[in-house]
Amino acid sequence: MKSSTKSQAPLLEIKDLNVGFDTPEGEVHAVNNLNFSIKAGDTLAIVGESGAGKTQTVMAALGLLAENGHASGQAIFKGNDLLQMSAAELNRHRGREIAMIFQDPMTSLNPYLRIDKQMIEVVMHHQGLNKNQAREHAVEMLRAVRIPDPERRIRQYPHEFSGGMRQRVIVAMGLLCEPDLLIADEPTTALDVTVQGQISHLMGALRDNSNTAIILISHNLGVVAGLCERVLVMYAGEAVECGSVEQVYYDPRHPYTRGLLESVPRLDRPEEQGLNSIPGNPPNLLTLPAGCKFRDRCPEASDACREKPPMQLDDQRHAWRCILGGDT
Amino acid sequence: MAKHSLRRLLGLIPTLLLLLTVAFFLIRVAPGGPFDAEKALPPEIQANLNAKYHLDESLLQQYFRYLGQVVSLDFGPSYQYKDWTVNELIAQGFPVSLTVGLTAIVLAFFVGTMLGIAAALRQNSTVDYSLMGFAMLGISIPNFVIAPILILLLAVYAGWLPAGGWDWGVPSMVLPIVTLALPAIAYIARITRGSMIEVLHSNFIRTARAKGLSESIVIRRHALRPALLPVISYLGPAIAGMISGSVVIERIFSIPGLGSYFVQGALNRDYTLVMGVVIFYGVLILVLNFLVDLLYAWLNPKIRYDQKR
Image (cartoon, rainbow over all chains, first blue to last red; front, side, top):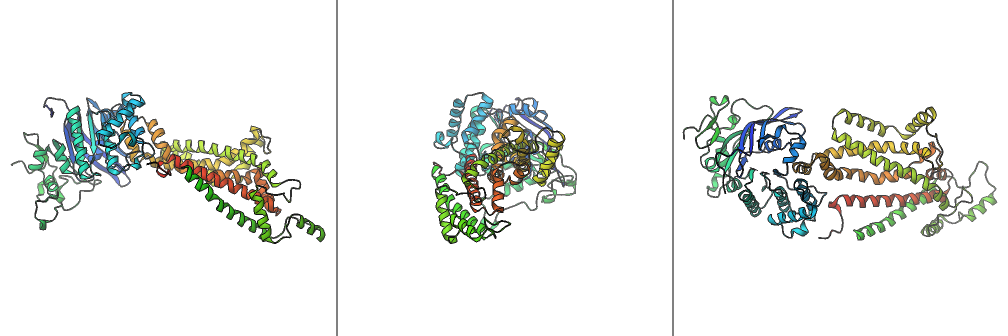
């Protein structure tokens, strides 16, 4: 049911988002002038290296930045700007309409509370169910993420679950209120390949059945290809390329995207070629260079790259921030 | 859980035996004896006294005789307080020490954690800095300095409270309890603040916030328990210290607690009294630590024993 009709208003629209952190060394520019939007039923992947600002983008939208962090710009969810909301207003959306699946399953569950307590509180808080109804609902959700014997397991503590099981509990917790927007930060990184597939399948089913929009943050380009329609590539806090999975994977326009794709290990490549990598490191976020942020690592860089490159857009909604790539 | 608790309780016995043995021989090594006075007693009387209290036997004989008494829970007669047995002295002094110590620790726990949480929630604010400044003062000023100051201010100048003495009335309890509690309040406030700040930065608190729970629920349901764990582990030794270590306080406020008997017993070489108090406190400290361990395990599921799988 991929009903992302062009006329539909976006569910979440990020406009000119900047996220910075005050540190003793100066201000860290984690996200810079980011723009993107997602409609109901859409699946958007945000990919990029560690420190590219993927997680902080969604943290800013959910009001979960660390105390030294600050965000400017807009994050318009269903017509209201999340960045302008008080904590109490945010709490009406968080958990109910926007659910977040965090990346670290070992530390994201409260080790001092049983699973049932942690799951039930979401449903009771947002949907006003009583304890028994909430528990039944939670058990059903655990069954859906294939946790065996959920009636018994729900009474256990997080440390009695393996990492993969915990991640499934976190996924189940995110899905409890059937959110309109599910943000999944590396939901499968900690999991076995087989379970990765199951979780990814589960999220796909949720999108198809309840028209949930999904933002998937991932390093795993394989999982992205399996689940998502659109991909946003981030580098040093900026969007460098955005398009459909087909456009970005098969016709990458930004040299960074090409480097990222070539870094994926492949079985069909001759062994003596070894693993590809992009030489160098991402720029220091304290002192971002003017002009193209990828310039120092780019094999195709020229003097023209000292100017900030414009966002180019073709008629197929494929966008990239580079002076090159427009002619193909 | 029950099986484990029993095993741990039995494990206390060798510890106690060691404590008893060391204390027994240590006090005997100290020069002088229970019946030494300014004017030496005539040798015959001295010999009679020694014979009556079996002090003429060999040290080893005395040791095993004493061991036998302790097993039957009889600490023997006091040498100094004639007509009193050690059991009677403990029964008389302990309720007072217990009242002061326990009230002080309960007060310290509630006030300390409350202040610590208040400081943690306003981290690096004026409130935080002033609370922690006072806490530092409370920790560093010894109670034999705090006590006279409080007496001077509240008893002598203001005249609100008695300067000392003990009549089981609330006014006579306030100053000793507050004096005893202040350093513990300060210490608990500091640990609570530190652990609360750490917990509030942990990932599971972020998860709780992402669920849309209000901040007060996040703190009460998710952060409080882990933040209190370090306080609980401090509580075991602290309770014991406050029930037994109030010697100074008892002295300053002239309270007829067990601490004064302890000191008097040691000074007078009142062997049985010192041994009785040492063993009594030993048992108390071990049992309290054991209870705190149980409480800790109850709060922290990860270290619960005998888990049903």
